[in-house]
Length: 306
Image (spheres, rainbow, N blue to C red):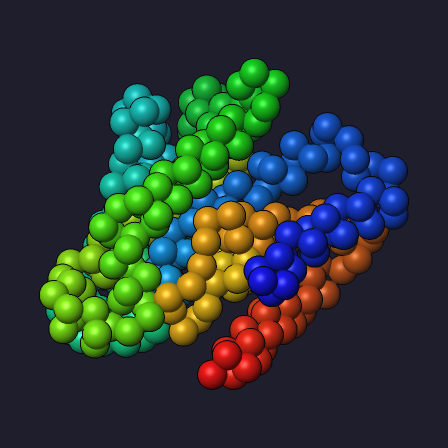
């Protein structure tokens, strides 16, 4: 119980500490900036939550984000209306998610190896298609997706709440969610009880890919450019968000609320470091250390239970 509440208490302590440490932290401008900055990681982390619950891992999320964002913005540059161009980005993410799922389930290859391979393929294709150059000629209205406000609240926060609600619904109230927990806890037992393991594993990766496609379009909207090098290192932050939020890399454990808290903890760490003048290189080291700490705590808890 204490371990489950630890991320929540950490977020509160971090929030209060930064409020006292910097007069610029507790302002509307800064807090809305934190929401916008963490929206991309949060969106991808929701998909990663389902994958980790199902006992998998996906190292290709950053590359899929770049591929989706690039093709979506290229569609806009070619004259496609903004909603259709966003749909292109979503479909690109869905394609890579399905590809990962099918390779894992049909070829029986370890998810780590498959997604490491698709990371390289997606990143390489993105650079080949773009010739290494960003896409700039984008309609100004597209910036609303990542930078606009709706009823005084950042639009991406509304999007994030919708995606979080949908993911929670899938996990807690559908067969896909129940089966994901069963597969992550014991894939062999799930198979012998009649659960279509391959189908539901593929579905989980496809859903994650779809969210990566959306994150790619949000990132492109925030930058107002399709960057072929976008998303580098994001896979570390996304996995960290899930693990810090109580997800287990052994599978069978995780929650939407925990993941959101984990992502916001990292967002506040990054924002606080910037406000206090702490080196961004040190931020990367802190994230790595936090992942090791979170996994170590999870392992110790399981040993005690065992």
